[in-house]
Length: 436
Ligand code: PMP
Image (cartoon, rainbow, N blue to C red; front, side, top):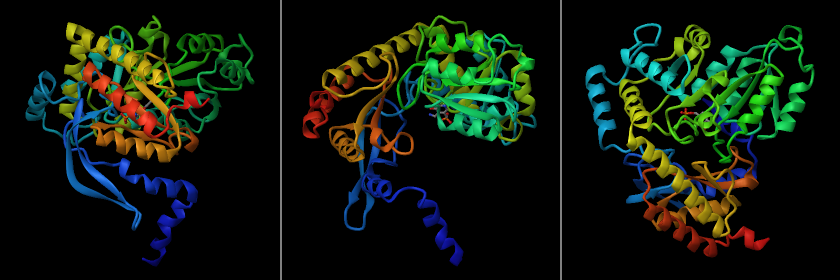
């Protein structure tokens, strides 16, 4: 079709020439095929960039047992050995892999309801509903909670799935500076008189949306500050715990436990099962009325196929380990220890590390995407796989490597990773703090 030849170039022209050229030259650091579980070590197929023709090619060479510093395998449940995977295999035998229907129709399994009750009990709230995809949990449920005539206050660094959910809702969106309580209050108080009853305000509802741990920044939300403002201005709070559930708090209950706050203080507790549980999908927990409203109206509950049984079983097994066993506590402790050691080690080497010491996300600023490419290739040569992030996930000048810590990594692997980073710091001139 002659019309189609313009389709991709027209889309691509949204990006600048500069950005496209840079990303073409480092395309080999992305989309490397992995041919193993995303555990502490992975097998990865090498991709090499060829300057002639500006393309990258798979060399066909599989690099074995590369230390994985990039997957969100926070508590080590992605591994395929032991109780978790055996239970998942059994559930595939019993229920199959695909549910072939939505929850409302033929896709409501007994293990779905069991998972929802277990998750609600774990968090200490009345009820919970689960969905097949974390991204869709945000993007399809926010429009179920607010609409035209409502006000959303959204943190400037909120994840793309939250941003999409806000836009689809047709509510008025105000973005406040990341974790900045003064800016949040300024934007909250605009048009709202403190102490005024909800019914007399210009907004039907006011919803504040924040994350527990920010996925690109490694920062932890100022939850006590947000809660105080939510109460003062009679707003509702939506908290995305994708990176904090399982990873923060002595029992892994997330950012509420971390701050010693009861989960019921937060109106809408959202999270994903893709990180600490080594699985897939998302949930929303809170009071019964909220959960029943979503069960009846959420597009993800009504029109999408429900969670795959082995995935559901994987979450149930990992959750039982996290919430009720010594092993679970040890994994949480090991993760916390690794986060501190790795972060402090990088800082000592002169790297600029963003975020909170307790965060499992460890972003290191590189500024230049070219250095990102060089670092990723050199780390791979030394046996470590890392993730580079830049435009459009971050501004291009704030390109960074985002390390993710895991309880599955041994102390030796972490020390070896620090030694490799130290070598590369001099090779690639990455000691920015010295440069200052
Ligand atoms: N929320 C946040 C904060 C995320 O970082 C992500 C993805 N990493 C999601 C939601 C989407 O979740 P999933 O990958 O499970 O679809």
